[in-house]
Length: 240
Image (cartoon, rainbow, N blue to C red):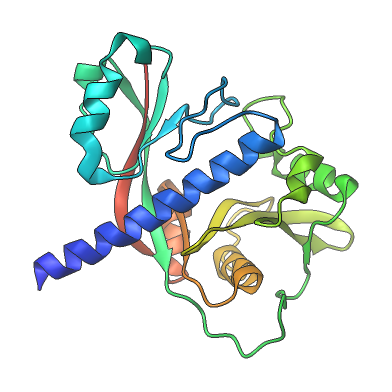
């Protein structure tokens, strides 16, 4: 029974990691940066985005061997999706840790694309600029991470909660084969107790009956768990 549970958690973590790699690839593409299918950013990645994302825990030995090769020295940041790489051997350190989160698909007897009250889908470059500014408190770089080209990707949706006409909270939904990704959840209100519940409902409306995945840490993880998300695995970001 325990073995079966662990296998299920690993599968969910793998789905979450794959979805997150799809998100990274989509954001890189919006900047005309190239990535491979197994997620390696061929060009220099954006600030605070990894050069490489591991997608298969079973391939950790192969990844370790590759990363120790002299040709891999330009891989300076890695999202170790299963916290199984040996950072010391690689000459890297842990930059941060987090948990993959999972919420089963929500059964919704609602019209397609129905959003919670006061939530909207970002559709124009001006709206996206306003979203970016509202999110900017979480953005440690002056660079525009989410340019208007993001709106051309049918698998990316930017969502915002309005207070009057101003954006006070929001998130990103990204669709992949097996899940909907929830990321970049933010609110300008401290102790926004309904934020993750509303964000969950909003992204679920974008992708139909699929599980919702992402990763969080600290108080955001606590808030996600309080909204029904399950921790399904640990990840780390490693840097040289």
